[in-house]
View 1 (cartoon, rainbow, N blue to C red):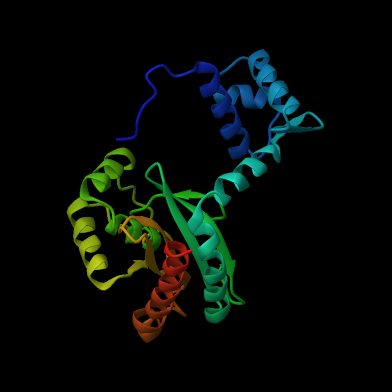
View 2 (view 1 turned 90 degrees about the vertical axis):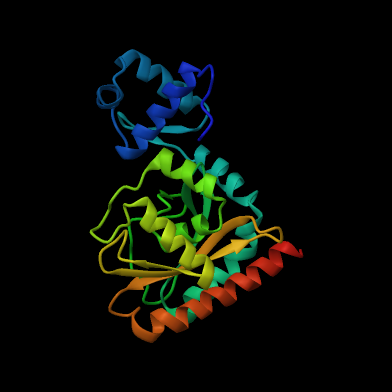
Length: 254
């Protein structure tokens, strides 16, 4: 299970709550934000003023927005992950060769975080972006990662996040998921058959260290009208496996 703070700092928790609410609301006035987070207007104003002073919040008129100070921190966090540097050119190459959407996902705190995405000329537009967090059980990327984790770690993640259903195709039964993860380990790659988005197919392969630890996963995603038949079953799996092999070599022997 995820470690819990023995003595959580209330001020830190409030700051995170305010920032996340400000992001979800796409900007807000003090009164609106106070109502959203259940704090007084004066308290919210004090937090916003402090964040603004340190360049983490900006004010436009009488509305506040998340500032670019977080962007610098996010870039630092991404750049410290070695797999990002090794995978970026190969993900871009996958997008160019297939014309579809190519992705790099990394697991953190039991969720998948998109580290990089590249768009081919025919790529679909989805409700995801670099930095977006997603459940692991309903994407090919996430299942590739889960399939190469120790069973007790998978259990911890499922205990923490559950198996939320996003489409009628989402796997919501643990035993069914465990069975699929075993198949993924056997064949080396994973499919997502409309499990997160209706009408979307995805093929993914894990990225592993020399010791077998899973570092992330890469994928190609596109509409079921284009990714089907031999392209789904043979062509794209071969492409993601080849790209994963290059990334692993560059990561493990650099």
